Image (cartoon, rainbow, N blue to C red; front, side, top):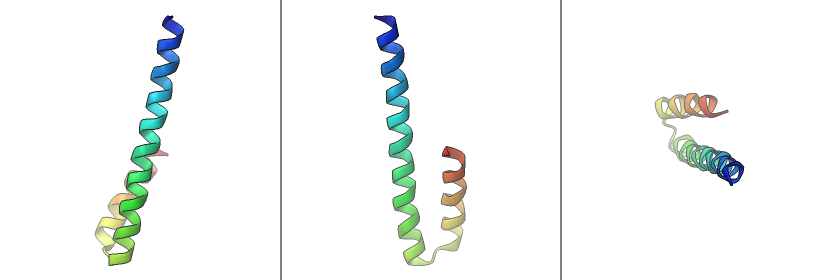
Length: 51
């Protein structure tokens, strides 16, 4: 039972990380399309943090 909780928690963390990365990627695409260099640099730094 306890092992199932640990595995479920690991899976949730992985899914959460993927969702954050997807969100950052989307925001990065928008920033690039607008040419917002400051935001692009910030989002690229966030992406490096989550990799």
